Amino acid sequence: MKKYLRIEYKILLPILIILLMISIFNFFYYPEQQKKNIIKEINTKVINTTKMLGLAIEIGLDSGNYKSIERAFSWTKRDKDLHYIIIVDENNEKFASHPSDVDINIVEFIKKKRVHLTKEYILNYSHPITVKNENFGYIILGYSLISTRQKISKIRMNIIFTNVILMLVI
Image 1 (tube, one colour):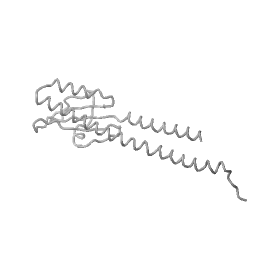
Image 2 (cartoon, one colour):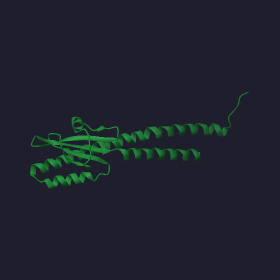
Image 3 (cartoon, helix red, strand yellow):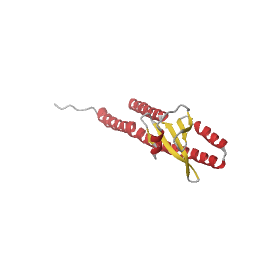
Image 4 (cartoon, one colour):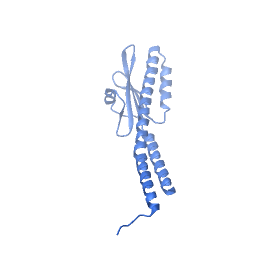
């Protein structure tokens, strides 16, 4: 004996399956794409901030205007997601840092010529300080991705909430 589905279920079932597929897609694909885009933008921000600070230091050293170096350093520190800034001299000795107690393997970070992510979700980048082709040291900048991870989590929660509402409406 065959069991037949009622007409309401025959209409509702494909709609629910499609909605479920869209929900799964939105939950996994969309936040991951947003994460990639945000990290790409932050990579660019980290590189540009480091190079800008490096340029300000280079100009300050070349002109003897050390107050401008201090102002550029203070301006850079204002970013709430900035984890640390370290300025080292040509012998890789710490010259200035924010916060002052930051402790990282300076040589390891200087060797890496690209932005890299640590286990602690810190994007790091180092940039040389050169004046008239002479190396005066490096800037090492660490940028926290914790708020970015929180934003992605919020996007996922919004997607879940929206999908649940849609399911309840149908």
